[in-house]
Length: 135
Image 1 (cartoon, helix red, strand yellow):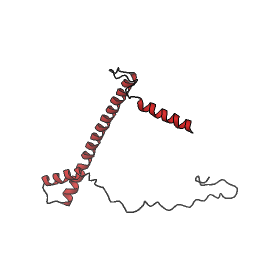
Image 2 (image 1 turned 45 degrees about the horizontal axis):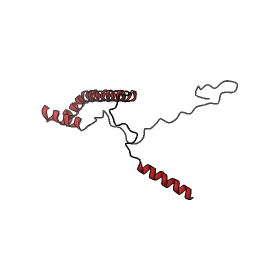
Image 3 (image 1 turned 90 degrees about the vertical axis):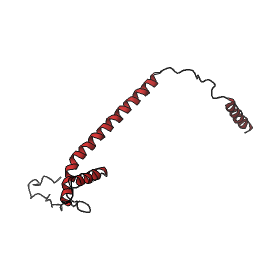
Image 4 (image 1 turned 90 degrees about the horizontal axis):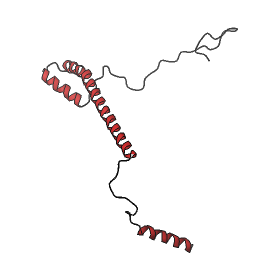
């Protein structure tokens, strides 16, 4: 037990006496293959980020081009007394807030499926099943 304590104590004092700069070359770095690979990955990542940003911009432009006429018709129908400038301001505000006009209202609750049709999988005596959905 004492031997273990002496070993641990000597290990700790040896580590405490070591300086961080021992054995480290602080001179100018040379460009290594790993540094070049890291910069290539960074450039590739930046290119993909720029590509994603451009795709988002184009997607937003398509959404606005498709949604603007729908909103204009909707607001002209709901507010026939407003001028073109006022309707344009309402459309711009709705697009800025991310308003999504729905063509028709959706019913509340889960979708309802039609009732299942009964399948007759029992063939007449002496023949094969007539229904192809039987296994």
